[in-house]
Image 1 (cartoon, rainbow, N blue to C red):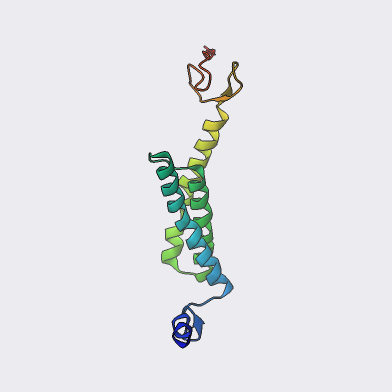
Image 2 (cartoon, rainbow, N blue to C red):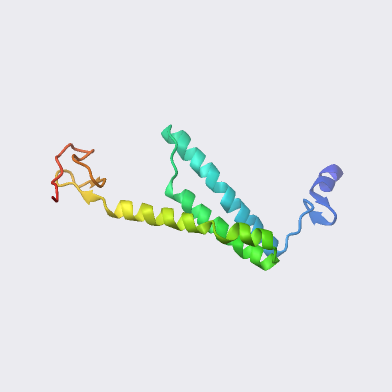
Length: 132
């Protein structure tokens, strides 16, 4: 039991880490940002192909903004610059995703959503009417 106590508490800190509110905020940012890789990996394994789900971009955005706020609080210019701009492609990918899904239409045969530029409904096979 004494050994466990020494492994968990040293330098008068749990795991030897500083647990101030800002440090916890920074740890959460790192956890959120790192979790996106596991979400992408899980999705790719499940679908048996490389897939980047929309939650990947949300986790990227949230994690990078938390880390930017933390680095601004710490005043560390290296981390501020590292976290100042990555959110731009994350937001762009979210916009592209939203526009793509907004372009889906309803099938006249089965009522399911049809991907943009489809010639036939992938659900029921009905020919999609052309707007041209």
